Image (cartoon, rainbow, N blue to C red):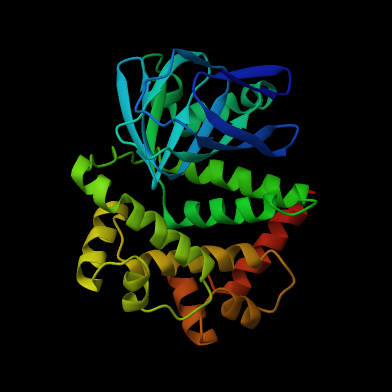
Length: 303
């Protein structure tokens, strides 16, 4: 049995796993969780004491809470409320790897009214312990940036806090028009879940490059036609749409820095400043310069 400590609280995992803390603040902890189970076993009953977000990087597992059985894999984010029992089981042999953001009790109590306002039907319903949401290109980009920042020898606390809060806001925004994630056939996950994991990893690591569909499909050892079809089934986006939204989110984050807009465009994978400005305005209803000015004005107001 594995025990990890979060503040003054203990979390027990009745399974073999490699768990270590990536970052700790006054409000939350970020854990890297890697399951080491060799068999498809069901864990003993465990107790969730905190509000948590679990972003699955690879693998597949079932999160069993109350009457719900949530099929969790790359492209999903598991939101769990405090105060409930749960178990975990694996449908296949591949162990899962996750990033878990655990919000401390004091922080949860501070924002409880906001949570109930943003997602009243979830946070006030005692019959729903956990919920599975589809991620978005924006959340995926924030998640990747968060992990990269956490790997630094001395992570910037304000940068980490900002990204975690933005992930939480993005997650809460998806409660407004909640759609239950599509159940994918076991056979499809078995053969192509790794394909999607490899594709997203490649896109994240080569965000600034001029990537072709043929190049990406070749990297994933699949034909371009089948790759396009499978990617759309898993994510709901074409590869082009997904990459475009990731790049725009990356640019949005860089607009909080002092970098010139032209440099931000190129560092986000856009080869033309004019095309970048048009794409940004279409997505955010604002030019990059106006968006930056509004950010500065808002930041000054909150000081």
